[in-house]
Amino acid sequence: MTLLKRTLLVTGGMGFIGSNFIRYWLHRYPQDRVINLDALTYAGNPENLAEAEALPNYRFIHGNIADTAAVQRLFKEELIDYVVHFAAESHVDRSILHPDAFVKTNVLGTQCLLEEARKQGKIAKFVHVSTDEVYGTLGPEGMFTETTPLAPNSPYSASKAGSDLMARAYYETYGLPVAITRCSNNYGPYQNPEKLIPSLITRLLMDQPVSIYGDGLHVRDWLHVEDHCAAIDCVIQRGVPGQVYNVGGNNEQTNLQITRQLLAELGKPESYIRYVTDRLGHDRRYAIDSSKLQRELGWQPQWTLNSGLKQTLDWYVRHTGWWSKLVPAPPLRENGGETP
Image 1 (cartoon, one colour):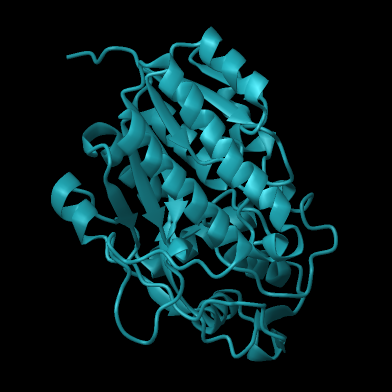
Image 2 (cartoon, one colour):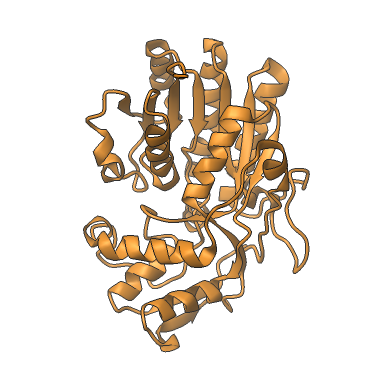
């Protein structure tokens, strides 16, 4: 049976996770239309979706989610069925230097989208893509669940927590069918080289040393971006409005372990590692319990960290032309993994 044509508004679709999601959706649901709203900041790369430009069911709009007039105009021009909201300032180091930009985009921009979606009154689901960083940090034991209190420790995570609460308020106050996802650290093709895994890969491919914050024992749960896209698909199709769904890859590793695996894959010695002063407010450990998503919506991660890292490394080896323009003089430091 042919499904009715749906129109999705994807914000931040030129970024790492957003572009992977758009490719995923257009391949899986070719009968649907996808509208991509992106401000084309440093993190938005039109090359990420070059192959989609000629498709009749894909439309790109250059615009900022915090530009009320632009967002109003979009919702008047298009009848949107689903909103998938990725757009966000997401790099922790940048948030420490420029927290105001994070509040404007992540909090005010999200509120602008929610308000216009509310006014249109036809939205079947608004999926707000967030991060496990809103929960703060963990000790050596335990995992984040959907009921873990929010305790953000950086301007980035605080701005995302603010956007989460705004999304919740639009559900509780206005009945807008909002579902919130909170993912662990993403990795995979098309990730900006400022992030940990592509930073390590690209520097090593250029035969340059790599840097790690502190002792390198900060723990993250690594989620392949394709598994994340599939999880969002489940939330769009079967997620319950008003609910939060954690998305994790069940792949806890320290930054040092990730670094050593990539060194081994590329045949580089550990002498390439440089330990640098730790980042301000650096959360020690994240770990996601995604059992609710698995139990209620039937999602399961398909990528192991070993297979996912090899696939990601192979992609960067084969796409030097994509990343070489982004790292003319890569910084000598280690950065956090991708979160929306």
